Length: 352
Image (cartoon, rainbow, N blue to C red; front, side, top):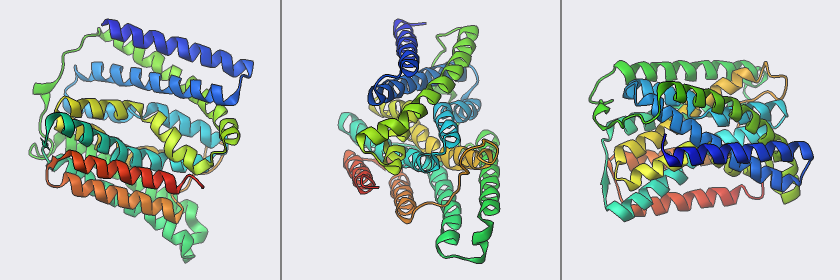
């Protein structure tokens, strides 16, 4: 392990330990929320690093499966604890915010910083085009329960059943996507073994750290959610804004950092892949899985029914990012436009 790895692990242990102490000591809710958010980001970075180390031994296809399972682990725990606490509006906003944050904010920052440093950047357009199409289909699937609810169709009285069916279809679609990605057309999912970095951690160390960070993510997520509601009340932040911005950014720390770093290194293919795959995993796996789990968690029952503004913001963001990737190149000005769109959306939800 390198020195920076030890520093990251040490920082995570210290901050998480202090967060646990602060939680049981009943310190100021805003301070506790800030500590829990930093702990969550550090744990997410460790999960990302361990996943990268394990993935370097498994090849690109298996690494993609692994990243799908582990990359969003902290956010999954946060949403589970939030649902058990009855914060379903926070969870909805956090899931949509994760998609918006990756598709608009992080993608925009990657394009901006990568473009300023490296000029016009080019990437193989077929994989992101496939992801963009699947994202559009996912948003269309999520729109059906919302329209059913607001148009008061006969299916409104069967929304729970409709949600479960939509969730099952999205999960099956993701299974088909994985099969295609691993065994599909190499012109669409090219082999990237040549660019894989050599592992610097031993396999036992990687597995131990991965298991420990998974356990740590569960504890930190519980503390984070416990501090969330008191901090929101103290700061005057509404449920939707807290989920859309705060929880979404903290829960997606891995993709936020990695995507921008890859763009700065002029690895545009990897940057676009990491950012867009994260959004796709939220839409096709995390959200549908939480819909099903919510019926057994004993708290709030999650639904695909979104507010009209939330659904419109999601649809517009997915469409804009799709237009950018379809030509296989980007310039820094497109990054400025994406970041501007994110600021406008965030401002619109500040008041609720």
